[in-house]
Image (cartoon, rainbow, N blue to C red; front, side, top):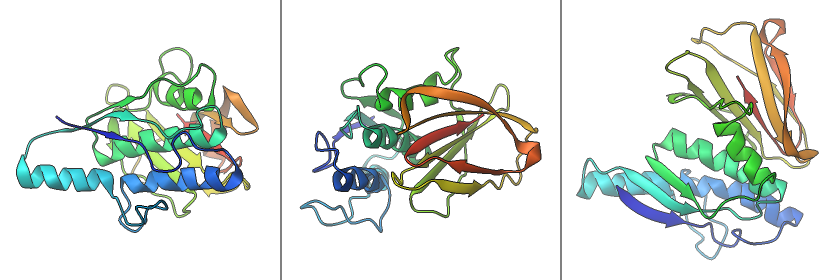
Length: 220
């Protein structure tokens, strides 16, 4: 495994004012997006994960990629929690083999809730799926990640509304996926950052929902 560490410049351990919070949530794109120029003194695309995969392919094919220290700062602010939710989805989608958070989010914090959405969303061991499914969003401020559970076939869909000022209406397109009408919605938001809310979601009644401003929502 190629082992690297990553802390985003100028937002790790930085403030939580509106401008810094918005920048923190944009900066997750430095992990993968060649069109995103890092907004620090770096002032160029980082494209971290594809860049590392390319170097591995060139110099040592077969190595896996590990990011064994990472942190986006502001763990007790909604921007830090949503950044964690976004980064975990990116790691899965982009083929990071293992990742270790440094050090740990405070219990009950938004960053803690983000980890819980992926690893224990219902308090009974419910986890995000282990087999990636392609997911895309047409809104720059909305991230979407999906996976199925190989044992049960259950679909899990993570939606992260990184706009801290505006709710985001969403229409789901679940083509090529066999889904029942019954689903459960788990979420936390800047309006209620200290716990994960759970409520039923009826897909048979339509595939539209509204994501609160500054929120992470898991549909199961």
